[in-house]
Length: 141
Length: 178
Image (cartoon, rainbow over all chains, first blue to last red; front, top):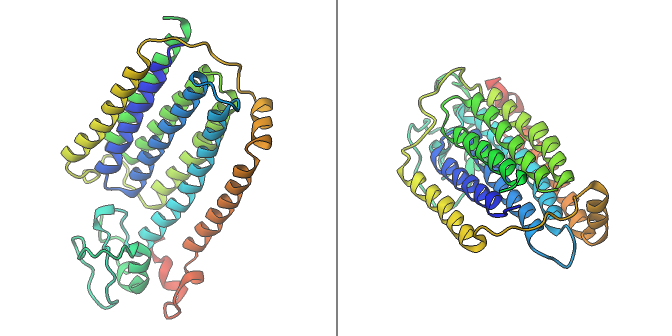
């Protein structure tokens, strides 16, 4: 078995995942690209389990199992956030999420809001204005 | 170049090709289905690499649960049927960083391993991995179960607007968008 084949496959998968995370605007597609990156890491771990001699046997495969569990937890919370975002803004476009909080009576911005280093995120931003954002779910499409 | 290498090459080509389609296609649902092909090919690579349990866990959790969740999310966010034009932002920085990361890592690993061959170890069956998980790795395993529970509770709290609301908003106003 030539270990370079799965290693290079994993490296290319990781590169494609990075590309997808940076390229895609839809939040669900961003999560799919994150899955690609996690799979690349798993492939590296399983391959390293065959090539590296460790003190504990099968350490790489055990870590791959742990990463799979982490990915399941990540996708659950991530999709909950995405669905909440869709409920509040009727859109899952990641570059239209305002990063700053604003008062509830302000109209819906078309472009991204003012960038502030608070990192308040979509939950805190949307908690102020569900009436405004949820009123027109058909408007974006 | 043995049969194992040929299998790994074929499965790797399928995985990389379908991953490229995942990040390039304009159909949201098709991206999820290409992701199934990619994860299935990676599961096949695990099988060839003698990691039986990881392969079946991959099929169960990734192909079975994660992709179904993603497809549910695609449908719940009312993705349009057919191609959507506005899925991507301009791609040159992404191509530069993604290509740099992928090809850089590939060059690093090729330089590290060249064309050496190793023997496949004994298969990672459920019995051997179970001994490891519940023997040497039992503390990370338990910590991970706590993390999974907290992620579950977090997802429930996030998707129930009446739990985390500050008070003035009535819950009925939140779920208007079907």
